[in-house]
Amino acid sequence: MAGFLAIAVRCGHMEYVEAGGARIPKLGLGTWQNTGPTCTETVRTALELGYRHVDTAQVYDNEAAVGEGIAAADVDREDLFLTTKVWRSNLRHEDVIDSVEESLDKLGVDYVDLLLIHWPHPRVPIAETLGAMAQLRERGLVEHLGVSNFTRSQLAEARDAVDAPIVADQVLYHPYKDQSALHEYCVDEGVALTAYSPLARGRVLDDRTLAEIGDQHSKSAPQVALRWLVQQEAVVAIPKTTSREHLQDNLAVFDFELSDDEMARIDALDGDIGTRVRNRLPGLMRRLPL
Image 1: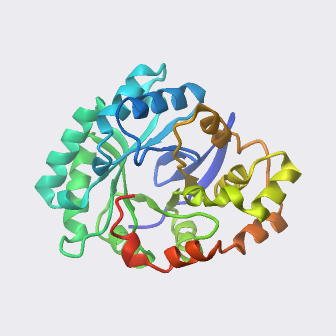
Image 2: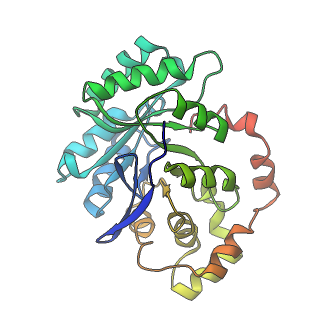
């Protein structure tokens, strides 16, 4: 599939990536490990505060709770960018169709804005899964197609396997995780790069460099980490939290800008020894349902 230009636009307090016809808010709400009434309230609160991008997945076991939060919020459906993901056990053609229809029922919506393959599967052809997803798109149940946890070569294969644009690849990305090669490819080919675990599961909280930079902008270390991500071309971040205060803080990253020197200092970070070990265990990471 030919590339589409991925550009950033600003609207009010939010910035967006436009890729392959999709207009994706650069800051969204991640919901991994958030279930039940807490998840519902988190989604409702986030939408109340101004979030317009919510990310969930079949394997998170929270699509119904996310849907209840959306229903409880005073936000028009067309103003919300909603993403879900097809789990690895549902990647065969008929399983994709059936599971996504079930996801829509749980979410209480007529369509999702973005449907992702959650993880690549070595025994299920990408073309089979994407073919089923394209059929859902033709039926109006899915607006846009994407992937998650795909390497550069896997993303290229996915883009060649379907006529519809692949608008996003959602991957682990934070100041200690180098995704520069994948990011360069995404920028060149007009694909959004969505960062999950953008705060390195809280490890940025104690980072001295991020704190020092934050002091120059009256911002916290997590806000600097998020700004570093969303300031990059074509990058979207989906931090997760259940705290109203942290929801507000995470959203407040569009009123300042990092200098080239500050961006370079963050680029050079590699984290503590535990973080470096995690970054060198791709096999282990691929067993996690992030």
